[in-house]
Image (cartoon, rainbow, N blue to C red; front, top):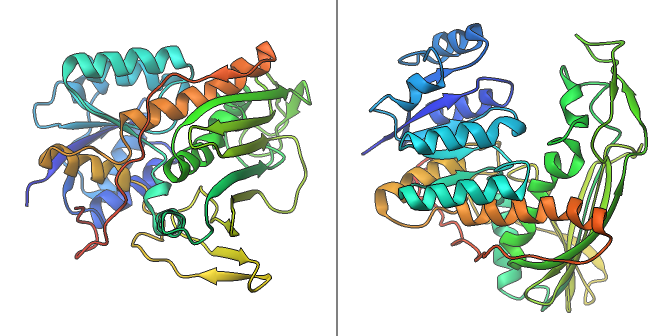
Length: 368
């Protein structure tokens, strides 16, 4: 069984689940090495997971002839530069969300990848999990009739009370839309197809935030990005969706995602997760009934998109969490800010076709 080799750039908090899954679950990829600006993080990962090597810096990883794919786990405002340099060194790249923090960054990366004949893939890959793939099958089968609309809500009071390093979330490249919006937008376009235009409004409710979590408790940070963002999406299919994300609101539940059809309503799992309950409301029953999950990967399967991309490279097929998707999602995300500034509808230009649905695997960890 051929295995492609992956080098980690960044070994922060999100890396743990990638390390777990790439060493224990996904059978067609192999970790070549890791690197981090804080060397002890990389050394700890090497020891814990018995990895082959620690790279002195990312350039050493880029130059390693054994590495097929660079896994970009840096902070969002660093995604563009790391991905650009990896592509220039001839490596395929799978990046954490988002592709970049502006559409201009995304455009430049797509152009470079196409010129070099390289593949870009990216998070989130939760849409490939059992929850949202089952929803896609139900919707495509007509269980709720013709889709007329959708709505998503990500409501919380922010990160300063629990996150160890919350300052970033209130700076350019952060905020609730770029942080959590990718999960909702990716879920919606994978289910309903491309967004054709959008309009939004946004604001910064509080000029500063007091950090109460360790190790920065007592620090006051300035808020330099909008933290209350609401918008309307018009899909090419004719469906109309709404999306609301905020770090400003006290609310008992964080996430909600719904799809409305001519014959019923589907309540989707939290798009931040791979599994979760699916509920349907139809007029015949006048109640919510839970539907079964029909696919694999209902537990935390981060890295699934990377494993799928590796299989796509070896079989010459399109990756499911591929460049077209992360590019279109970035245009939607950045479009919310652009529309809010202009006060007008924004027409989108990036192409998008839904990727192939997942196939039930004969063996977990091996993709079709």
